[in-house]
Image (cartoon, rainbow, N blue to C red):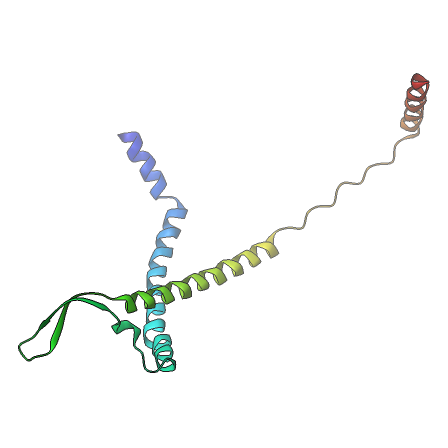
Length: 144
């Protein structure tokens, strides 16, 4: 059990876990911004372009009752309009993450050092040249 606790302590104290936790918190805040962008800016414009539709109020009513003042009260419904808004929010968030990853990858490519040129091959000495000629002559004579 001590080994397990020790491994967990090592895992949780790594920098990657802290970075991931910060990413989750920032992502949650970013989701709020994107939800507001979709619900308060994009969808009203889309609804206006489509003749005044409000997607967030679209639902399939499963059960409905009448209140004392005579107004209908939806007790349960499938809110597919809110689902459409969520899909649009997801697409915007996914696009933003795509752009962020693309920018990070571009920075990484620029930071990578250029590959080193291969070391120049030194000119063989006169002795090495003579030995190579002897080797080639021996190969040629052995084939004949």
